[in-house]
Image 1: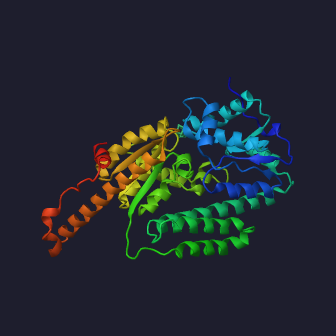
Image 2: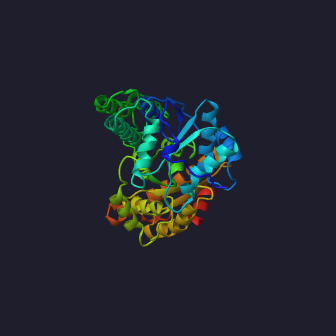
Image 3: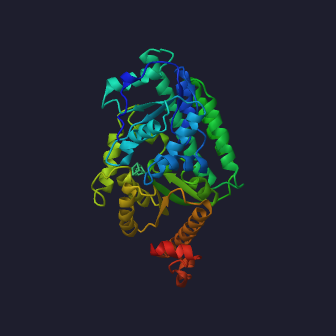
Length: 412
Ligand code: SF4
């Protein structure tokens, strides 16, 4: 039986103990915002195997991975005393639009007396949106003051994104394994310690400096890989088995198609979504996938094309098992891969995915990209009439693959 999501009228303004989905670096910002509004906060533990099995136990069997992880996070936070869950709603023709209904259903089934406050885009129902924010505004601040707090949180999210992007570039070139991860923790702590908007800019510079101080391998130019796919598994490292850290430590620079600020825009809470950007992506994907198929399927195709056009060495698509938009995108990406001559690796993630096998696949893919990159460089040198390279022309063959797994990707 479907449980209707409660409207703003159902929620009284009061001091709450609030929790929310755990996603990337956003938890510290949301925690600060909710505390500033006068609430207590229970940040759910970073999702792990226990979170997932707890969520899977109480979710429909064929629900997608993000729903199971978020369910587990909610239940862990409720166990620690949370009495209110704040989440964004979902739009579009995929299951994300029903997440909150399913969560409400699960809470009712478990007889958990918890308020589930679902923030739908203000343009859908402005009064409902304001009413729900008021329910969280325990300090009774004016709307203007609340808007200023939200703006400050937004700026912090942008700063965290900026730092994270730098970390991906630095990690692939680091001279000492693990030094970037340590520096990144320090850099995010600097941003998170800031208490006012006026201090943020200076803190961002200090955080950037911590990362740019990491010693690099001289002259090393890493492979570049674009990561596309479903939003939750892109943003939450525990859901994607820390793919960016793993690839970075293999000497591969990554860029992903969505960062936190992108998600915040997509949730359409702080401003109208990036329509221009969205329309541009639809245009890019048009001749391959002309329909909005829900989730980020169309975006995955568009971003993969853009990465190919920008000269990236490869693309990795991450999708939760049974995610229909990404399954459709996967079949289209095979054509993109052929047409743009860019290797694409599609990885489906579920509760059975183990880190060791995952890392082996990444190593094999990186191995394939490295050999391909070298062969292309040699070929380009010959085409440019480099006399030394031309003497090596007999070596200009398709790269030989070093592992069975790498051959498997070529065949895929
Ligand atoms: S995009 Fe995929 S994983 Fe996300 S809700 Fe839709 S079907 Fe599930």
